[in-house]
Image 1 (cartoon, rainbow, N blue to C red):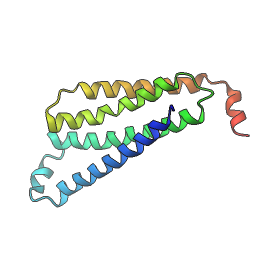
Image 2 (image 1 turned 45 degrees about the horizontal axis):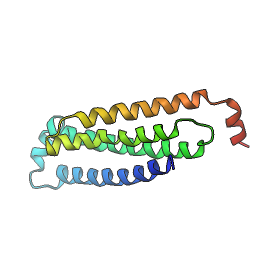
Image 3 (image 1 turned 135 degrees about the vertical axis):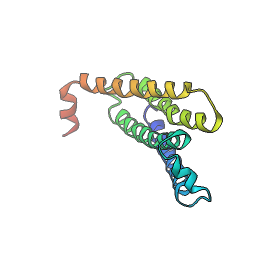
Image 4 (image 1 turned 180 degrees about the horizontal axis):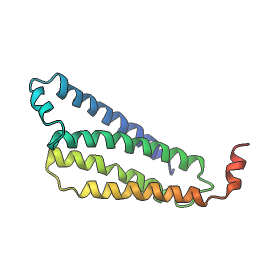
Length: 141
């Protein structure tokens, strides 16, 4: 079902990146070598891990929202399956950042994820823009 998986995966991903945020707080405030972590606040791995945390939660929220909209307007929108999959693939962007930091992976996942989420959001926006005005009036009754 288009949209349902976006909502489920979105909430699960958000929960994981929230936990990751608590790890970042631990590293900043409580870890034995916290000063070294603080000293690299705006550079290197520290900066990239914060980017992954922020984008992971943002893209998770976008998947929840996109999933809800796809379910709610499934009869009025076309290409819901493609939009749904592109939004899910977009989660590769923050996961790719973490793969770069911790595994030394190349940035290909970051690029694929970024392009996918952008296409998904723009495609959904255009789909709503092209939707007939009467659809919204009928739904508000």
